Image (cartoon, rainbow over all chains, first blue to last red; front, side, top):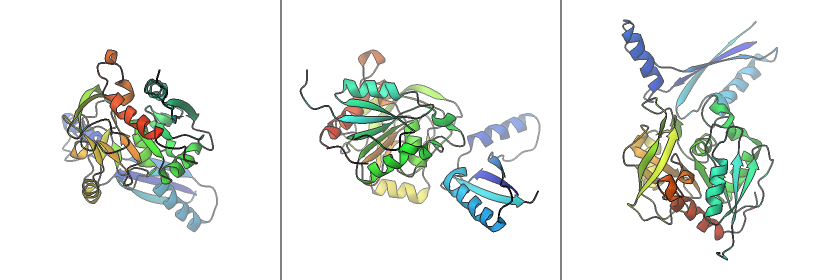
Length: 80
Length: 232
């Protein structure tokens, strides 16, 4: 079982990294209106109970992978 | 020589801390007995206060302070704080305290994306804390900052709470990092945990340009002297 966690700065949170990327893309001539930069965490979880894995992933996000005050997260679990 | 008792103050050393010895030297000069405590220690020794110093704990991977908050000694630091023990976080130490939930808010990359390393002027808003008692409200302190991620963030309700509880202790006169409300230092609700981005330990000698940092660390030493060690 594999999981991918996407962590994003919450809407309204200042994202200077995203702003820098946005202005560089504009300089390259792309019509970009906004860029936000987050983080991807890929996890290999072995063959456990998928429901337990989902519950664990929620706790991983709350405790470490994201800071709930400033970041939102999205978990995707896939077999293989 | 002063015959006043020298309160024992722990300075926690994480892998990647780099201001631990400066903090210890400054505290010693101000009359404390600093003791360096390695992050892997299961408990704190008997101390009257704890300092989490500046640096780049655990490489600042994931988010600044996010990994350090799980260091073995941090359970003991949390218990110490919960029992009313005095805890000061400087720069990376401030980030660790926010990540650990011992202080409210979070620290984000500077709005400019530039690392800032210069003296900044701060205005004292609270002079009635254990960390600012040598100051007066409205006093201007000149203390250096050196950080890439010092942009303090609190959402609307939290900011309103901080203002209402008077938990904002210091504000920048000329905001170097985009912090909301020009916030440079906050305390917890009880007032025994304090975090700031500027480095008081780098401003304790006239040869360093300012001695205003001694007013912060000296306040802590005064308060620590009043306290018997808190069991952690």
